[in-house]
Image (cartoon, rainbow, N blue to C red; front, side, top):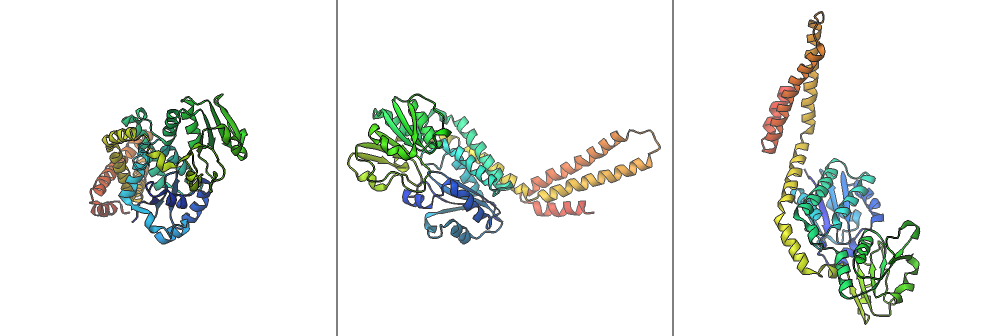
Length: 394
């Protein structure tokens, strides 16, 4: 039986391939609907650095899944993990081990969002719901105990530090989603004088600082001359900044996936263009220090993985556990009824009698279930199940 699996593109894969196989959020529901025809449960985790498909199924057809995703021509660029390896992977992702910028904090929110979209589209139930809930809990505990907040490293913080280092005063941000907003907050802690933010609907945003000015997205090119740096973080499925759009010296950061900036823009004299891969290589000293600290707390991941694997294994015998409980309840009621009929003319406290009948029955049911779980986890479940089924057989 397949426990859980993941098919994905590593963040370390060339950005051109990641871009080609990425799935923007508005298209995820459509992909989930197609995958639900093949898998019992499925969640799509899609970020600026990764695209991963988590699935649960007793039987699945890999070729059908890849065809549904339109990934069938890119098999060699994907990784495939199942069972223990797949479970361990999502916990490592939640803790930031598999990010381009190790330990970056945005991934937890992205995992939550992936789970929410799957729930909204009814594509995840008991197994993947539990897996993603525990992954988020693991990520939170890991960051708290490792005190990663003392070493802030994210694409947003790296960009803000670079802007400060270059004494840039005026910035244009394209897009105000989670990444754009976070970048803006980091920039406001630096010495910037003005931040123009291009949004689709100005009525849906609230100004948080006098240095901010929200502008209509369609007019963003009118502000090129007023700024020294452009940070692009839209969710558009196509490029936004093209080679002919900018004709002056400019520092550009492209945080989008697929990319917002045409690759040829970097060929223009005076323009420095950094995509998410190039950004991740900045501030390496802090990143290396963070990774060293993270390794010391890897045991937290091991504990969560072990807990989930035990939970899932025990889940296989839930029908038998429920049967034991049902038989226990039925038997105590049968014996209680006989007791009441026999002594109905006596002045006895039948409520107290029921309490004791049920307590004794529950005690033995709990003992049976406890032993069953222990034996099952130790690999001796088959013989134990045979004996218990024989005992509770009506």
